Image 1 (tube, rainbow, N blue to C red):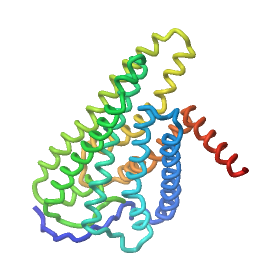
Image 2 (image 1 turned 90 degrees about the vertical axis):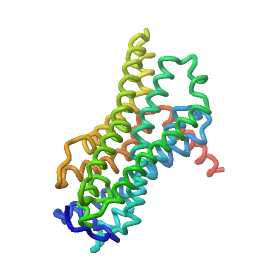
Image 3 (image 1 turned 90 degrees about the horizontal axis):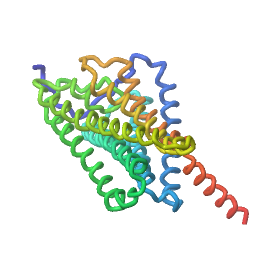
Image 4 (image 1 turned 180 degrees about the horizontal axis):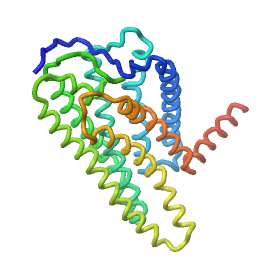
Length: 311
């Protein structure tokens, strides 16, 4: 038990031991944030305007792009302000909102990637019934429950953390992140740790297991395709999603499933930064560069608009 502190604000001192990195970090994060906004906005606009992309795959991709914009917008602008300011503080309410939103969106993405894997499984393993199974009603329900579940898990964890007394208000992190905040709590946090462990299993392990088995069935089906062109086409529809899964779950598992220590290491902060900025940026790049349908739709959109301007 420590001395309780009435907290009205938090000080975010992540990477403060490396002041020379702050300007480089500011520029890098600003550029990546702009790429995230531009890339994901293009994916959303294209998937809405092009009738050929009105499919379950692009409906879920639109959700993922919107999620990535919201996820980075919940923390990056505030982080950029704090990095360049002398008083690196955020209000208690602001910190709570940032934690609920960013954690909720992170949980939502975990489930959404599993839903997208199921969509690819049905498309490749049961193509004749794909449009019947993945109808608009089911897609809308799956997307809605993905968002609801993610934010319920986030709300429970955040409320349990904020109800505890604090022994300080200095967060050794760049954003209001729940693992960093738990280190400031006084008294017994065994309930918080238990809830977080259960949430990690539900949000990380179970969806990852579903993704793994989906791709086992997908791979088995692809290998039974006679033509090499058919195998290549089938695998190309999954390669972008599989790349995103590896990037996202790799960093998420490192952050939330590794043994916890009292002190925050620089490597933890940098991996947390990659989880919060680099992965959302790569999502739009991967789905743009590795997807012929998206590239064709962008080309048609640009050609059409340039043609209309000339007229």
